[in-house]
Image (cartoon, rainbow, N blue to C red):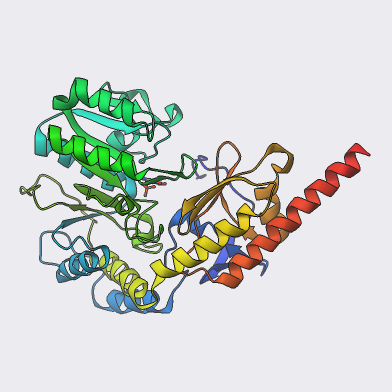
Length: 387
Ligand SMILES: Cc1ncc(COP(=O)(O)O)c(C=O)c1O
């Protein structure tokens, strides 16, 4: 049997990982500023995370949601403490798409409405509802097409206001990433998020904060939407939540009440996933990783801004993007091939940095030097070609 070939692959086989480093099967060491797509939050194979999972594995790995699983309550308590949303309610699932799927569905159950507002360049996942609020036609199968979703321009307050003025009473929910990831690292303005809150309040719609990529401390606040100083009704999470162990979830404001059987999952909230997620929060708190994300992120953005060839440096904390002009378009590829540094990308010509929140300043310095070197190399090559 062959693999279903849906992923364009880098020709690298990673066999070992520690902190912000990974190693391939030839023993080459790489600096990981991609974090396996924003998943590695506390660092690869963190000893506390490994120990917590190993200890749990010896006891029990899984039982279904038909019994009490006190680890879930422990996780909810810790998540409340670290995120500051102590009065919210936690529903656990397995991935980001599933988290958004449940959030959108729950909103519709809550207010009995069907219409959803999403934004241009949004990415919310691949399952049925999640993909229908994702602004990429290539991911939407005919069966997912719906006229229940309206895409509006991101950060366009007038367009949002006008849409609510006309259709406010039909809108079930508004879903928005606090910082668009796949869309190229675009930061939602604080006034835009405040307007979403105000309009949802006025019309009885549910504000869903997709925090799958920009959440879990990556921005320097637990949820990047928190920069606006207003609360969402539902926050979706995954990626950094398990540091590589598959776990996702939504937290739900107290005014939205649970009904038996409304949501459900076989694997979500299993013992092992809870142990992994607890380990992540414990390390985040103990090692003050949100503070580190602020500090190292600031350093990176400042240094990147000093490199004249790079344009439009943006982001918050350790979620950073910048435009790479065509003349140095091979930068990402060359960083991997020559400098052994993993970065992420967003099309067209955007490099995304999504490292572990424990990234050290010396690693950030190494990256900056590597970028400068690769830009000089590409310039020299161009000069030779034109000579
Ligand atoms: C903002 C956002 N939401 C949802 C998802 C989907 O998450 P998953 O791939 O875990 O289903 C992603 C994945 O990249 C994402 O970036």
